[in-house]
Image (cartoon, rainbow, N blue to C red; front, side, top):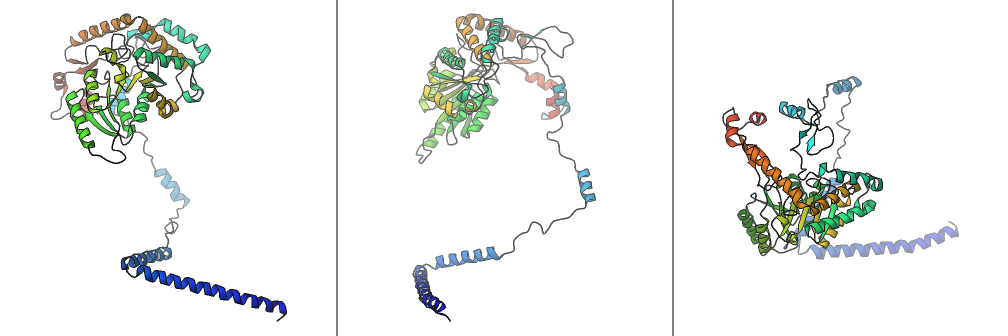
Length: 449
């Protein structure tokens, strides 16, 4: 052995001694820790032994191999299986009644309005259109149409962007101010679609831990908005203020003594001004009284009452002569009586600004085209200038049509007298006569009616 190897061996000998000594010290400390820790806690010892045993079993157990049960098919067998496979239809087949209803669907040839031409008609004569929401006749106004077409040269046919990202035009801001002033509220925000207005406003303020007490007769858009909010929902009987008060009392009793993060949830009463499904008007005076008595906020959908109810056509607050600020969130539509498109929400300024950041329909949908914005602004201005002309004509037509319909035997005409939304149903006596099978109603009976 040479001198270099000998030196290396001598140097490594002390190192091995230090490692061995450190290991011995560590081992003794571990034993001492285990002895002291588990001396008075046998359950802990048993639990950790079980865990160690489970870990050893899990590591050493046989793993499942997805390829062990693989079935090898020949090309002929694969082709036979492919030929025999029949995919299920994406939608069920139409019934005879559904096919008949589609075949009889009426199509309009040309622009919509008070008088239209039908594409499926045998002659080309115009007919009266009772199936639209053109209550005030703004769709037929040549002045409004001419001004809207002229705006195409300045604003084009679309904005191609949401309001918060290069989609806001000067006419949008002007229309928001005009709507707020017309209704008498603090501020307003404009949405590009009426349906998404409701779907955005309610979930924007009512969250999972909040409470909604809603009229069971609200329209489909309000129902979907309530569902999207994920709030706790209570339904009261349609326009029944006694049932509403009962629910408000019960909810407040449930919240007494509640502690924790959700001890004070936000509470909303949700209803419509003019009900789409019934033609009724909500008793706003009683609603405001219950709001203050039980400390709730009101969300009022005036999609069908805006431009229709009240001396000025400003909606339900105008109809009952109530301060619009009593309604915390007032939702309206511009695609019905106004004859344009889009929707809006009137509220205090802080609530409106919150929607500009949290209203999904406002943040992620392209803003309203300039041509429709100008058409809506012109229609509201015309209604402000001469409300007696537009509203008077509408109410005369509504009264006349109701009188004529009630003369037809077998029909039931629903809705309040002030409502241009007229619901025509078969009377119960007529339904009994039309029913051919005994017992309960069957799908065949319903389809026949």
